[in-house]
Length: 257
Image (cartoon, rainbow, N blue to C red; front, side):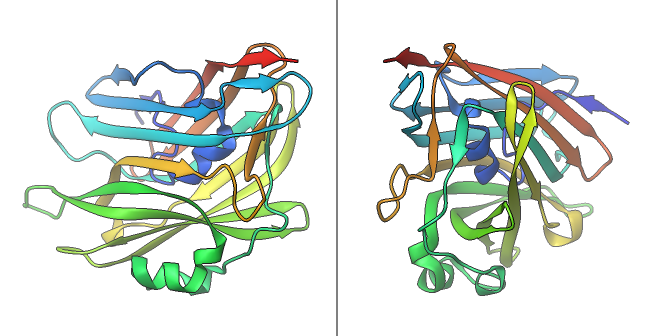
């Protein structure tokens, strides 16, 4: 079993997970690339404002991006599960934001997903899947990326990540992300993203970018405070081929007040 260091946060489940981690997109000046064996992983992003209160939660807008590739051009393994421990100084808020159900997004293209759940939309971006069928050259297939609020029940927040791929593959991929409180030292939030197979395991997400809104109908989906000049996140990913990958990322913030 290979061991890879993952710094492409939200790789595969992408998006939503990055939001929960917050620190994944914080403070970095430009992209960071790590090469482990044949695998090249790159992460980038940022949030505004960067100056945050020391004591009070400050609403932020998050931008996150990532990519993965094999140095020799071969097809990378697909991520199937992403587990993230988010900094205790970051929070996710969904109370008051309209909700969407998974069934409203399954087997829908982008336009239909928006028609059904636009009021629950909390983030947008782009993603690209690479599909590699036997004895064929890998094909890159782009898609709009949509992040919807699934609501909160019993202390668990649910988000849905929707992508619709077409030509040569066709179909919607809906990733479910569950977010719970997780007091564990520096960390306070646990997010688990289950990533469906793409074309029976032949497809892998190779890049994404996502913007998560600062304000949705007067509600702030993400907020953070800066008590000591940094935010931290721990990430673990499990891949289709049995690979497990994990790392911690620390980013700077500016405390004020």
